[in-house]
Amino acid sequence: MSRRASRQGGLCLLASAALFARAGSLEVAVQDAAGAAVADAAVYAVPANGGAEARGRTAEITQLDREFIPFVTVIQVGTTVAFPNRDPIMHHVYSFSPAKPFEIKLYTGKSPQQVAFDKPGVVVLGCNIHDWMLAYVVVVPTPYFGRTDASGVVMMPELPAGAYEVHAWHPLQRAALAPAEVTVPASGGAEARFRFDLAPRKAKFKPPLDRMKY
Image 1: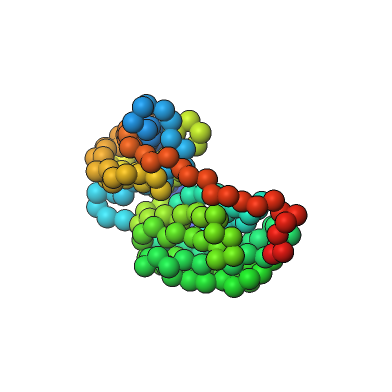
Image 2: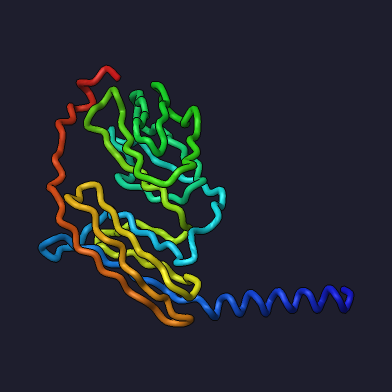
């Protein structure tokens, strides 16, 4: 290796180490009006100096036991999503949402097409054969995002230090919440807390599989 190449490699390592040293973490907790943990909330942090370039990611939303799994999916703008059907019956995936209207006609097995989500916004998914099937795709303009688990928490490690606008969204929210302004330190962590007033989730009747033709 030449002395010049060695020097360039050393500079790259130093730059990477400097970026890592300037990274902090963000913990976001979401609760309902009674203080109970809220699962399936979409959480994302937008840098104060703007969003980030799309990275060409991929994701998957499965159809299983006549449901979309997961109920809420959070992705960055530019992500391509596949919709495999793992049921022994056919499904028809569609959305009329302005952020991404599309349709995948009746199929089983491998998703016959993948869908690129190229605009931010909330996309509501349905199956026009099974009207109880419902799910949400939250398309965000940043690579810093997550979905709350059963404990109502999202952890975002290694965020570049700086100011962020943190957002939270849930399908059952009665009203939108204002974003939280958070500063992530060069080392250590920051926190954000949200409390939603949620409507109850109404379960629709799902007939037994052995009574269904498709």
